[in-house]
Image (cartoon, rainbow, N blue to C red; front, side, top):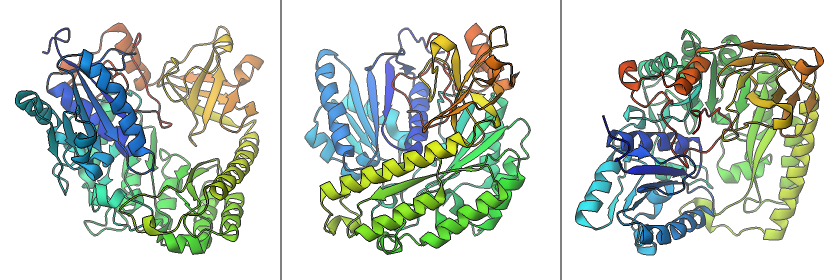
Length: 513
């Protein structure tokens, strides 16, 4: 067993999407397997600092070099410290990172996460930066060690890569063609996670609903959702992100008829203009998109639908933007991730003339204003509904956390993934992170709901879960990784400082962490 008092420390800083968050868990698992230990909570430096980068937005490089600039002076005062850069921007810029930041020790890409510990040791031995980028996937990430920061919830990758050719997106060139895992491997991983206390999983894929194309089964994703529903002890299944062009009615049926598949759907729209969708090479049109939403809501009336939208794609006219506003109004999204168009070198749209920045900014503001109004209206319409919440960590570090200490409000996620802050009535049993609480929604705001029904003598009930039991075991020091056969993958190890960012999935941490 590693003496953690003497072991070198590490932290992983994550920039980017859910895929990056999950990759960071594997990086942490690899480092712990190589004898490193997580830096104490609250520290922002360690013996090894890994920056897991994103390349989707124009400011990705600015964020990276801002981090690296801050670390340069730290490294100068800390002999032996190493800095590694991985992820999408590393895959794209390669040796350019070391040229711009010569104090970086290791650069590795999206296709060879497994080499991180070896490259760190080689850089240390040779006293020279190591840059190793592979052009295709060497080891499927899910076969690598993992060190999760969550007890109740887990990411499960079902595929990597993307076969689409959206003109604004650099991901296919950095993640490669779609590679699918076999269903048996995925289900075995989920069963193992459930045995460790997980009650919620989120299936990950660049285009999650195209799963199965590699082995010739276009109905594989719907079958996988139904199979997840057969796993004893698994309470909630989510997935992200599907592509509208590949969204089929059998997936809707699987969602509606499998109780553990949650009534929430994140499906990128990108634009409501058919002309812009065509220029983006998004192989659907607004009518098809709205038709999918109509069928989803017919099957699941309380489904919450969220989306991604790009404002100011090259050539977007005022009429195109008005079409987007029209589709957003009709879609009634519970929330939307909105972005101003960001040109990325290496993408077909990079060569197109950009629209004026002030026009883009003005349109962006109008879209945000519209969506905030819709979000508020949709959330107010939920007032009075009884919901069961998966309780989040109350230390404020998780997505949600303690909302209002004066009122003892805690936070949880409803089945439709809305964030709900709720009050524990005086004298009532307090839930543990990972437990499930039933309450009535009493107030709706644009970005969250309030459920104070318990203090008014209304609905309040706690259902204790295995995830809550695992939380208790961590707090009491009774959890034994070795005898449990889980290593550090169960999410109950001391959390990595600066670890994965919160993206709406509960993150549970040990007491005092």
